[in-house]
Length: 317
Image (cartoon, one colour):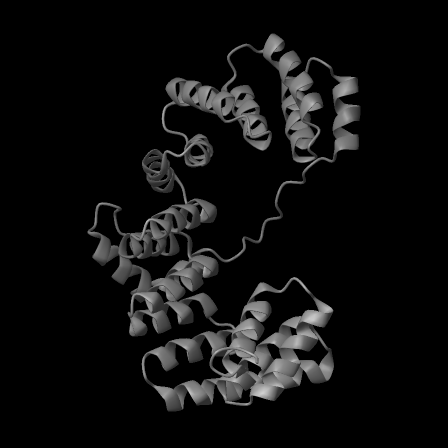
């Protein structure tokens, strides 16, 4: 799929993200080829034992050990790999990942600076350094690195991190532009959903609805999507349409609960009931959802809001 050049004005990229989302989503559909099989640690142990001078196997095992939080063992493999193949940039990259995992920020910064000086622009190194810079209070530097990483690759987490940092500094319109650029480049439903939420905050109601439809693509109108639509429609003053969306959401959650009781379906029906003015039913569903899954942040927030709203002015006497 052809994307517009990244030199287009930000507004043009945001419009492109809205108009061409269906194509972007189609372009990112799963490929038919199976992904390469990742070797487990036991297999890598056997491979390294059989060929101790094989640097590739050692690097794979070092990364596997890092992911298993066995950082010292990973460093042992990297020392041997470095002796066998001095100057390999991948060794520096894995060392930097380990330093970030261990929250050794100065060491991570030194390694990443060296890697970028050696290899030039590198998406993962820039993302890691942005994390280090943010952790050490240099948000401007982090934003520069995230923007450079976003221009090099289509990693969803990079676009999310960039937008979140912009939003944290109150730069909402720039955050929306960053999400739009990422959504168009990747076709990610997650980015389109986040863009819909931010468009709602900015009062761009039509844009928010369009982005929400992009996130859904060809999927069914389920309760989660319908409730998100209802929130946007309510904010836009389209109350009859918001009510209709909540009724559909309630019916969808009802149908799912008839098949199997889940915390998510209960929470969604609870939100629908609250939006329809059925306070007691909504609270009961949210409490039931939290009884099943106590750590359900959206349900907890809704229940807390509903509880506060039901208390008389001045609090409980």
